Length: 116
Image 1 (tube, helix red, strand yellow):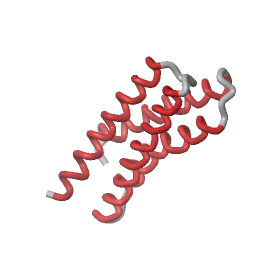
Image 2 (tube, helix red, strand yellow):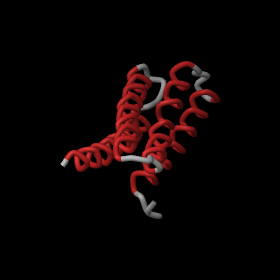
Image 3 (cartoon, rainbow, N blue to C red):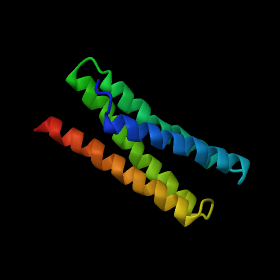
Image 4 (cartoon, rainbow, N blue to C red):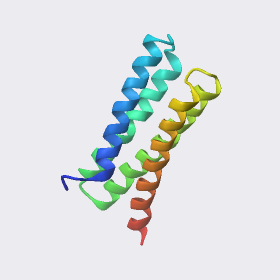
């Protein structure tokens, strides 16, 4: 594995942001249901990328990366829902959504290059 794997680094950094957002939502906003969904899928992105990198075959790598992509899309859904219900403010939501879009582009690009 490369020591400077950008998708690993970015998905891990994003997971840290999600954990901190979850802490904020539960401690400050007393929101437990939606925040748990956000925590689950937002941290799953990096976990699946990590599994993909450790995959034992091209098919395994592709499968785990595909799951990471789907989890990133789901995370975007929960962030938009939290924003649109005014549980998190626009600035926080936009920052998270920007990170999600970047992860989707990176993961999508890797998946596309595997098909070529």
